[in-house]
Image 1 (cartoon, rainbow, N blue to C red):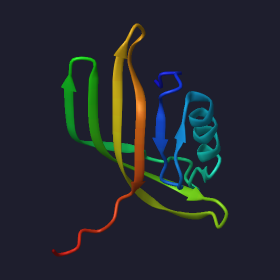
Image 2: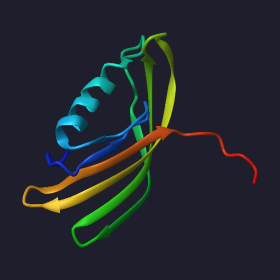
Image 3: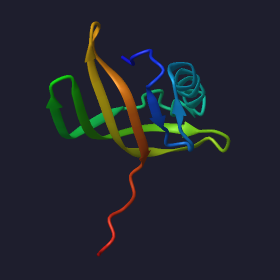
Length: 111
C-alpha cells in the first residue's frame, strides 16, 4: 500500500509529521495502538471519496473516513470522522501511497 522509500511523508491526525519509510511505518504502527475496537467489536469503517485527480504518475485523492473506536488513554468510544488527503505515485510495483494527511473533520462555520 505504501511506497517504502525515503521521500514518503505523513501528517498524522495525532500530531507532528514523519518523513522516510522507517519513520512513517513506525508512526503508523504507533497510531494503530492508540485505538481499540468498540464494545460491539465492529468499527464499521467507511470512506466517502470526495475527489480523485490522476495525472501521469501522480494521483491525489481526498476522502472522509469514519469509524467507531475507543481512543487511548481515556478509552472514550465514539464515531470519528477524519478528512484525508492521499498522494499516490505509480512506479514499478504499481500505485503506492507517498503521502497521507489526516485530521479530525471539524464542523462547518459560517464565513
